[in-house]
Length: 356
Image (cartoon, rainbow, N blue to C red; front, top):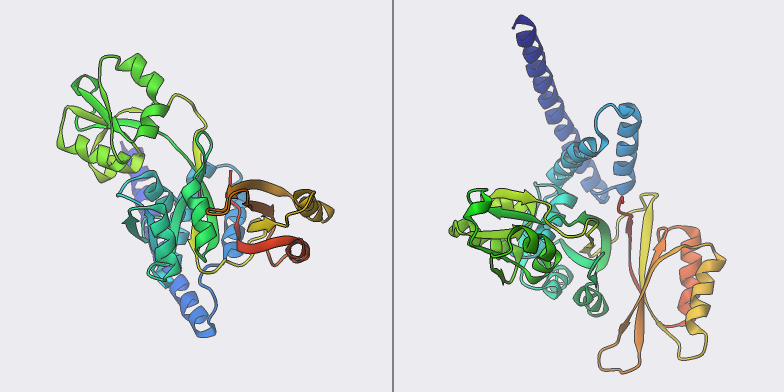
C-alpha cells in the first residue's frame, strides 16, 4: 500500500507539472500570435506543425502509443493555435453528424462549429465571408464521390485548405445500452444500408426506419427508450446515449474524405496536394495532351474525375489532384503549361496531404 501511495503521489506531481507546462505553452502561443499579427503573417503554419509531430515521434521511439500521442498533441496544438484567433467552422448539420465529427477531428474541440442545412450552403457562407472555414465530404470509399460538393466547386470561389480521411464507424446506441430494450432501429438511409446484414442477423424481427440524419436518429433514441439509432461516436456524448454495440457496419474500411474550404490556401507543409478544375479544348487527344504535361515533369496525379457542365450537354470539367504545392517550381511550370492547352482553368488550392 505504501508503494501504491508513492506511485499515485508521483502521478499527481507529473499531472501538475504537465498542467503548468501546458499553461506556459499556451502563453508562448499567444505571444507568437501577437508577433504574427504585427507582421501580418498567417497564424497557421502547416510545415511547423508537421515538424513538431516528426520530432515527437523521433523522441518517443515508440514507447507511448503513437496514435494516442498524435491525438493528444493534435488537441494541444489546435487549442494553442485557436487561442491566437478563434476559428468558426460550418458543417453539414445537425449536431453530431459525421461532418461535425470530421470538423472536431481536424480542429479539436476548441473551435466554434455551426451546422448548416446543405453542402452548398457551406460554400455560400465561406465565399461571403460569413464564416472562416467549411468542412465538406467529397468522396466515400463505398458510395463514391459526393456530387453536390464537386458541383459547388464549379460555382463558388473558395480554396481547399486541408483534407481529412475519416474512418466511418457505425454504432448501435440507445438510452439503456441493452439490446433487449430495442423495438425499432432508426438512422439515415446510408448507415442502415451499410449495416443491413448485421441488423438482419442480430435483430431479425426489429423494424427499421430511415430518417433525415444520424443526428436526428440519435435525438429520437434519446427521447424514446424503445428506439435505437445507428450513429457516430460523437452522437453518444452529445445525446447522452449508451453504446449497445460498436462497429456494426457490414464492411470494414469504410472511410470518407473531407476537405476544408476557406478563402486562402496555407503555406507549403512539405507533404502537399494541389487541386485543379480544368476544361479541355474540343479536339482529339486533348485529355492525353494535358496528362502528358504533368507526366513529363514527374507530377503524380492522385485523382481525376469528370463532371458534366449543367446546361451544356456533352461538355465536361475535370477535377485533378496533384502531389505537390503550387509554390513548388515543377508544379508552377506544369500548371502554367496546362493553362495553354485548357479551355478553362481554376486553381482550387494547395493544402497539407491527409495522413492515411
